[in-house]
Amino acid sequence: MNLEKELDLAKEAALNAGKILKELYLKPHQIIHKGEIDLVTEADIASEKTIKEILNKSVIAPILAEESTDIKLTQNKTMWIVDPLDGTTNFAHGFPWFCVSIALWDKDNPLIGVIYLPIFNECFWAIKGLGAFLNGKKIEVSDTSLLNSALLATGFPYDVRKYPDKVIAALKDMIVKCQGIRRAGAAAIDMAYVACGRLDGFWEIKLKPWDTAAGLLLIQEAGGKVTDFSNNKYNPWIKEVLASNNKIHKEMVDVLKRFHQNYE
Image (cartoon, rainbow, N blue to C red; front, side, top):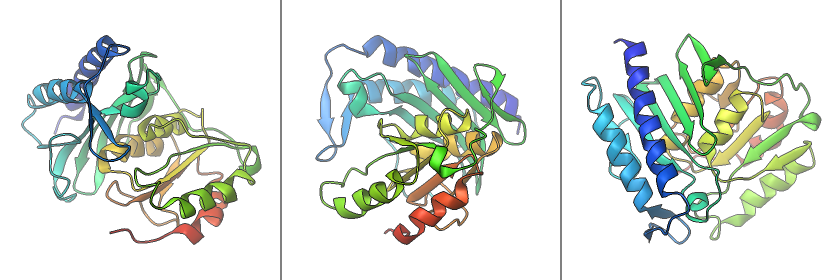
């Protein structure tokens, strides 16, 4: 497998999809509700179509994409994992915190990760074993060594209205331990920001593989750590994620481990 060639393909797909999102941004949207607060727009569909057309030039892997593929596709296969628009609610409201996320997954490891923020023209990418980059410049996680000095990010699951108590309890426990918490609504960007040191850590529950697959590799290649809340090995099919610069990871685990559970 020529990973450099596949990376070029993933970048091409992300940049072309991002161009579509930028063109549609701030225009009237066709909004469909997948759930009570879970949206999909015409931009999600158009972005995914473009990504799949480009990735299909590669014969190495099927595509697991948010809007058109069965989530039951096993994690033990080689596949592309695609989120054509992470931050759809933000996009629909004209809030510029959204991205395209593409990962190449091989059985139990990410090989390639690309996250592109079209409004900011920032392209994060990583190849396993070769580091993580932002617009061609190598990136690393932050040096923050104490949770008390850390800026963190989190997110709320789409069923938070039904089950708010544990989400709010975790937020309450963490907010008194760190310097600050941001909740901007796009997990892939949160993870990219951990990778480049703009954030020191991130946690969330009930995410999907396309939310975290690319960010997982970015953080690993930038020197950070990603686990579940009990410090167990993470993969994108696990429904709780804890990411950090590694230096504050134990302190974050100490706060969140009581919220660890096995989700259906």
